[in-house]
Length: 445
Image (cartoon, rainbow, N blue to C red; front, side, top):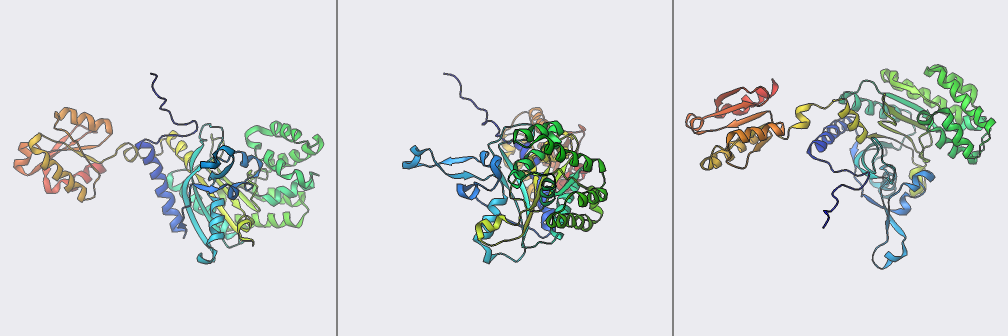
């Protein structure tokens, strides 16, 4: 009988202890920053009614929703009535519509939970992954965009990123550029989807996609030519000046003013903002400013978001201004791991000290010592067997535990604990009551 396959489903992953610790490390910084900015936590179910999700993400997004077939007597129909959540934004809109009377005028929430997409797996791209969303609902002020950019920037800076750029645009500017180039309104969405890939597939690739969408070569060349000239400007002020000359609609001109305000309100963080007129972000629910965080040598982004003033209205029946930002937790972890940005002792070691067992008669005393050290706030592992001491040291070294505590017959008689530093090989004895302080001191070395 052939052994059963043990690999997880394609695009899914098992998370071993070191993986979980990396995730928890990043999440701890995210939560600390978001709560300092006044955001409150929210959680929603993994499963939503399928009508809640369908039609909210555009044609491409609809195809990536994991559908759940009807069950029981309805199983044979092959129809779906539920789906795994695709993102955290649409569930947020549903929650606001459901609990509107219980929420404050300006609802500021963060949410860190997994989402699922029936996508093609690639480097840093999975079918199940965590999102870290932060959103503000109830205000049309560009202060909201500036605050979201500030919070996301602070998270990355505290994690150790120094080379990230915040790409900023506005969907109304995009529409204005397309309209000025002669692209009919009915073709704006497919054109935006193609333009969103400009950095990934280049001008030639986008031109080919536009032709496939039956956009004439002259119109496509006009659109791409304008974007190329804007990219060459390479300065926010000059880009905004050129945009004012390229677009004619009042809505697009207002959007340019909003971009100026976002940059102005961002203060010193404006140095990291780069206005990118080709930035589209494929989701169809965006109505205003959109942004992404990019780092060198990474296909895709570390996060993104934008303003979506009409989405909540789909559920509530009245407009509710909203803007949000989503950090890509999985991609952040991939980049931090490749760049060795995690503190090695935090990621590799499950405990700060391991207590050995000298012999069968000393098991109770070893348990008591482990509890004493844990009571002082230390992370403590207890070796479960009365093995040879060499085997216990070898086990601690394999786990990456930096210190090992030994209480042999002699140490017990003197009221001492022997501490072996697995990093240097040095060993010394300390008074048992002083062991917690001595361990903390050794961990600082």
